[in-house]
Each structure stands twice: as C-alpha cells, then as structure tokens.
Image (cartoon, rainbow, N blue to C red):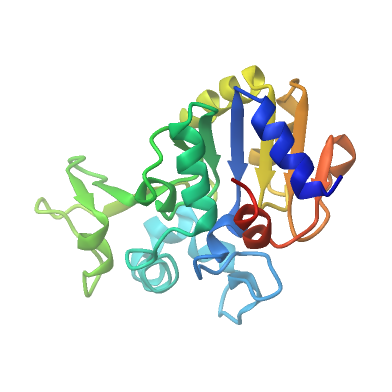
Length: 237
C-alpha cells in the first residue's frame, strides 16, 4: 500500500488524533524556517541568530531585538495553506482533538482551528512588561521604533524567547499526546528540546512522522513519510 494511502487509512480509523507540527508546516505558506537549508539561521548576521530572539537581547538591547523581530517574524499578511486547512476540516469532523505547534505565526487560527496549543507562544499577543496592558500584533509590527506602552513600559511579544521557560500550554500538550491513539508529527526536525521530547510521551497506537528529511525519532514511528508536506496533505481527504 502507498504510504499516503496508509496514512489515510489510519486517519479514517482513528477518533483521537493529535497533530504536532513544526516550521515545515508554515514554509508551505512562504514563511522561512530556522534550521533548513534556506532557513533564517543560514543568513549572515552580526551575532548568533539565537541571540536576536533571546530574552537577554530583548531586555538589554531592545532596538536590536525589534529590528530583527519585526523584519523576520511578521506573518500578518501570510495566509494558511493546504495543511492548515486540512487540519481545520479534521477538527470539525471530531477526529482531531488538538493541534500542538512550535510555530508562532497564528496560521492555524487563521484557518479556523479552535484547539491550538502554541508551545512557543504567538506573535499575535503582546503585553507591557510594567502594567501588563495588552497590544495586538499590528501595533508592534507597524510601530516605527521600539514599541512602548502608554505607561512608558516596554511591550513584549508573547513568544517564548531563548532563555525563557515554556508556557503552561506545554503541560496541556503533554496530556493530549498521552491520551491520543494517533499522533501525527509533521514539518519538524525533532531536534529542539524540550518540545521534541513530547514524542517520547506518546503511548498510543499510531506514531506518524512526516518530514522531508529523517528525524531522530523515525525508528519509533509506525509510519514514516519522507516527502514534501504539501504533496502529502493535498492527497488526503
């Protein structure tokens, strides 16, 4: 049986599916990933690229942080792709119980998905570090300089920066994965901890890994599809 046909069969027979996605889900929409061959980390910078997205850079050099953040993390004009749309339909059918994503671009919500667990936060929510007033993504990305609150405080995107703890959403993700009978992992190299460790917690029947390159967890999977994600999800119904 063709691997995509096998995936379709597993989906048809499953009623408790959890999807765990990484940057490869959003590259189909034109968003650059981090570690891929054409990713952000392959570009030349004055500093290690992880420094620009670190809490140290945010608090010590906010202008440097926001110059990088606003030029590289803005997904306001980006639209969902076939993967996001397929998952929304799967959720509406009652088969997909949760989407766990490492992405911060909000594309799953744009596609209409309801139960999205953003374990690295989101660019669509921001808050003042002094008074906690909330600000939307448009305010931050369209601000010419360092975005400041009415009170004068620095506005921080609600994304998990390097050096910060993961949010409570991570604990929710653990519960969904633990209870699932099918876990579909797609578009992630599974090399970034602790997010990649979620796969080890799955004890259900079907572990499916879809990625254009091999991952450290392929040997644990019941089905591995090394192919272009767009091609795979276009052929599912």
